[in-house]
Length: 255
Image 1 (cartoon, rainbow, N blue to C red):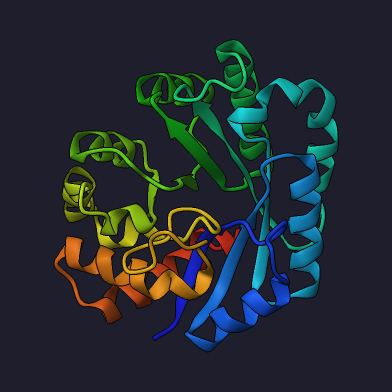
Image 2: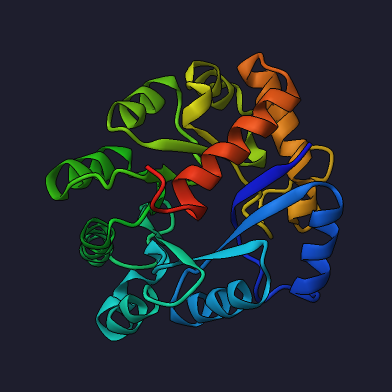
């Protein structure tokens, strides 16, 4: 089986990204989207994508750092023209931690949605404790035709609202956690062609790797948990999520 890790952070780890990629490749992970969360990590993601054929880059400003949009936004926008860059993000709203003020988060989110719309690029969204506000902003500014809710954590009702907007849902290792019954119910109602799978390396290692730093080599365990939640075979989920990741993210002109 071959897999695509639709969202991982491969720079700034405590080991060589090349070694991490080699181990992922050995277990069948043939596509990895390395996601930036600020200007520095976005630059690093682009550099990695330009020297590793399995890796693609997303460029954006995380809601935790949204207050830096005025100082970093122009340079982030400039990175979107670099080879290997396939998406805007991760961006969005995070009212759980509130590391940046809500108004700054909303302004940066709106600006990055507009970049995705203007350039017809996929949009990678992070949202936590802010589903209503996220949906309001998307309906107001517009929904890019390849919009991905990364590390989706909503229940079935939230999943339906996201799907009704035409978005894709990317499931992380949380789907394997014992206390994630609502998330598994959301996965069960999601159409197979609207689902992606991710590790969110180095966070959220799936069962049976909890307590360790996550890595793309654990993606088959995330995929197996997602397949169980969807009532589908692991092979079916692997093939479908790889195809969807290629169509939605890495081959950005295919849809």
